[in-house]
Image 1 (spheres, rainbow, N blue to C red):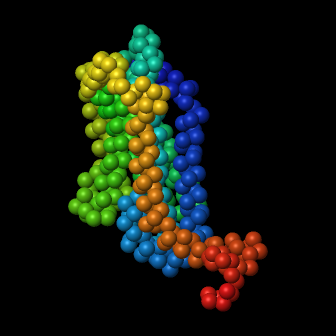
Image 2: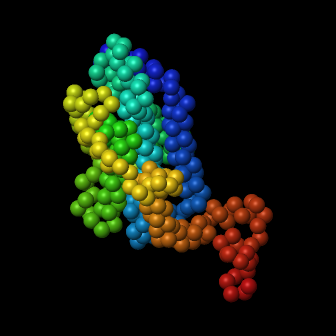
Image 3: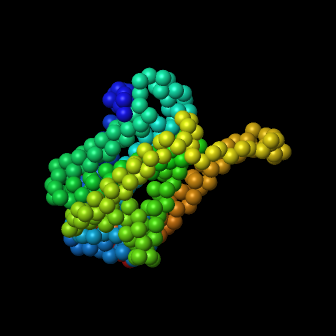
Length: 347
């Protein structure tokens, strides 16, 4: 572990701005969600109707999960707790890979290794920074929600959802940088595994209840912020992160710097004939990202198709939108597409 402190200071020096933006923007995202829910669904009846609609909508259940309560905090957590967990997970993977495997590929690891630095110091420094940043995300989310008038217990549970999701993803990334042949496969592999587990969580909410406790993301979203919190869930999630990190240290001595346990595949001796144009070469090098974007766009379109009509109806009939229209001086009903101010059937 020699040199870990110096490497931590180096990481903070290099990424002080991006780390701060990552932490602050997640907290700001949570605050905006709570403010919006309180305005658009101020009554329990409106929130009850919303909960009824999402319970019958498989796309919403797949992406966000069910609502476990009817308070403003519970509905806000149903809508955005999963998103905060995903944002924390993506940031954790990117920062961890950047300061471990990417440094190896750039040659910085060789320079650092020439100094009195221990074998485990680079990974330990990266983990220390990332795990601490996730903890700060939890603290800020708790402070923001409590400052907005939400119960402290539920606010803390929401913050721990984000933090434990980031810790779990960091553990996956720590293993991936030891196993995969490069920084890009490590990052994509860790993020892909996290999203695959998240998808399994969604499938359990839609059609397979027996899967609900099979993946860490399912544990976290069933901690029920603002609806009778389950604190023991976070112990399970933290334990899974500890196991993954321990496995990463276990694998440290089984690979060379700049290499992974999985060897790189040797390419063909000669390129295929169809690679003779710039367009073909661009497709060959970028097809993975293109397919990923296409799949994400299809899933996003399906979510809009299943949930868009109900969301627009809920928004159009909300008291918050009517109050906003009145403040803006609108005379017509904002929920009517034709702008008619009279009762239905009169325009």
